[in-house]
Every structure is written in C-alpha cells, then in structure tokens.
Image (cartoon, rainbow, N blue to C red):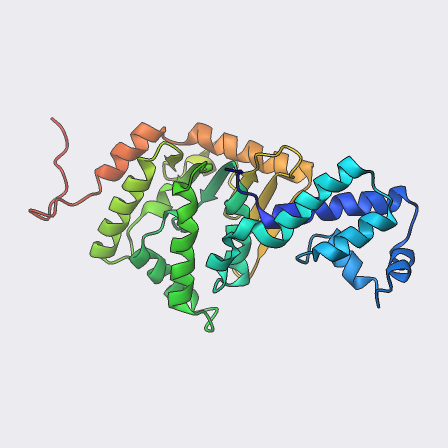
Length: 297
C-alpha cells in the first residue's frame, strides 16, 4: 500500500518545480499564459505558489510548454495527482473549515509531527467534550464557528494517529496546558483518560514542561507551533504557527531549522515520556471513590 501524501505539501513542491522549469526555459508568466491561451497570469502564479489545487490537464500543458523529459514528466504527474486528490481521502474533510483543512492536509502525509502548546491541549489529543469546550470558547472572537462541525473535524483528524504507517507524533506541553482551571471536572477527567490512551500508542509521545521551565531557561516561544516532516525527503519540511485569527505556514529551511532547534531545546527541558505519564496519572480521580491516588509512602 502506498504511503499517504500531504496535498498541501505536494502543491508547494509541484509549484516550486514548475516555477524552476519555467525559469530554466527563460519564459515569463505572461509568455507561458499567452502560449496556453490563459486569460491572465494569476492562474499560473497561484499554481507556482502552491495556492490552488492543480488541474492535471493544466499541469500536462505546462510540461509540454517546458519540454520536460519523460522520466521527470512522469514524476511530476504523480506529484500533481497527489496535490489534486490526496489519494481519495479528501471526502472525509468536506465539512472542515479552511484552517482545519490545512492542518489535516499536513497531518495526512507527515512522517513526523512535533507540536508545542503553551496553553491548551493540541487538537490531535483532544477528547470530544474538551474540544467542544475549546471551540465554544473560540466563538467569543469568531461567532460564526459551527461548533459541532469543528468538533467532528478535530476528531476526524485524530484518525491519522491510528492509520497504517502513522506519523511519529510528539506533543510538548507547558504545564499550563494541562491545568484543569476553567474545565468542568468530568470533562477534564475524560480528557485525561483520552490523553493517556493516546500516549500509550507506540507512535505517540507526550511530554510536559514544568511550569516556568522555558522562561527560567531564558527563551520562550511566542506562539504555539507545529513542525512537519514527510517520507519523501524532497517534500519540504513545514512549520505552522497558530495565531488568534489565522495560521502562518513557514517553509524556508532557515525558518524550519529555527523551530526544529526550538523544539529540541524545549524537549531538553521537559519531563521524559515516562515521567509525564506518571504525572498525568496522578491527576486522575478514582471513579469508585472520587479521590486521586494517594502519594506513595
């Protein structure tokens, strides 16, 4: 079975390679569009920037104009198909918002994901009730959010962690992200059990940074971020920065390297996976008596 691919990354790679081919052919955007009878250069520009889902017929026309050799042509056709269809998994994302869809596309083909969250648990680790609480809180600034659709989308994204050939997923969480303040007790206890269940999978690692550890070490990331790498080394590694209104995608090697180093630095400050699991279990309430486990003598 072929490994899954990430459509958003395949679009970025296809666009970069087509742009390089055009420049190698010493053609401008206007010259290519004139040859193909395209009304404006915006269509080609969006393809080269990876901003649109490419039509395979358009890609074939571009490869003809650039006189691409057979072997390279066949490789680019495979990338174009991945960029356009994602090997048939796209239907499950039909109701996702644009923000959710971008993350889902990145997660779909990732070989490894490292996420840092300073305040809330990442979407890939959220239980349904916890996700609903977070989405409803988001309506304070985005009142048009469809809460139930957004929750379903988050849960659908989690399926990537249990698929064949799942990504290696690491969550680096500030202790504040695991603070139940403001979360109803029953929701938080369900979330803890959900988190512990996911952390027990061989491809999932959860690590908690003790409160203030990053600040005391002299550096603190200014926003949550996620780092993605892919099975095909030619697919560009990517970083997503999460903000209140939108998300920023970084793809230059310099940017990615900086965030990869930051993730490594945060990991060095965090509890290891075993210590984190023990710390999380200490917060669980025994359903038979409503008490947390007693500290060992």
